[in-house]
Image 1 (cartoon, rainbow, N blue to C red):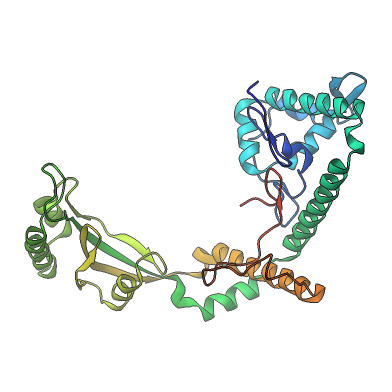
Image 2: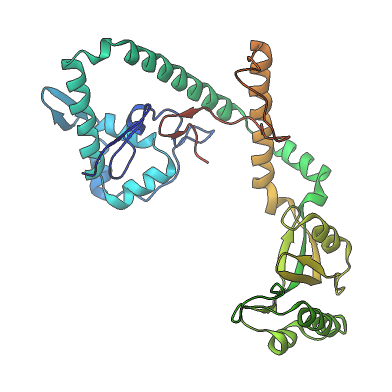
Length: 332
């Protein structure tokens, strides 16, 4: 076993976080209360799952049942469950046993009666309560089909998609060392004009790519790529969605490159294609609203001197799940 690293409420070993044994609440549960789907269990594993009272681990006089370990596994994050499925349960058993060994040693030395332990225990209890409350809010925050359909109708433009053939020409600064990939400003300008002329004239992008493509210097997309709102720089996005099919954009001067594109087609997304995205958005809105309502009713006050406001506008962000030692309270 690798060296253990101690910290404030966290300790790590090879494989899973031991802290997860203590703060499993909130991990791996979807709003419907079901654990995330994982690998299909084998016949042997399925047979074992029917005996939750079976003792599977002992440390001295202390025993742990299969049901207790299974419950812990259900509470792990999806990433930890994936790791467990890959490595097998032996590592988990070793870490669980180590937790019991150390906890028993702490009791023998009466470490549970120290002020530091009680302070940490009180904090841990609050964190677990917060995670449980947040999980309940998540469970109740479900978007109905009617709400999803209404949101789609009101925000249809957000799901518009444009497919473009992008052209990127790498430039190099004046006086760059020999061997640095890219074209000089004058060479890049000439090449841009040649490619724009070809694409504007209706030449097949595949043939244009064959003619002008230079590895690590000039890239011409032979096949169009989809672009959605929020994925391009603001001025490039504006041009992409305003141009008509077949039109070529202006040239955008980016750091160490010149970029432009030809619009191949526009497409408005269908509700069936974006319903899950909308449901996620509406769900998060409901979660944020519920959390904000709780904070408002609780009349939260912060000492501005001790908790100064963020220096960057908008740095506070939206409501997030309580953070527990070992990771976030809910799966990402």
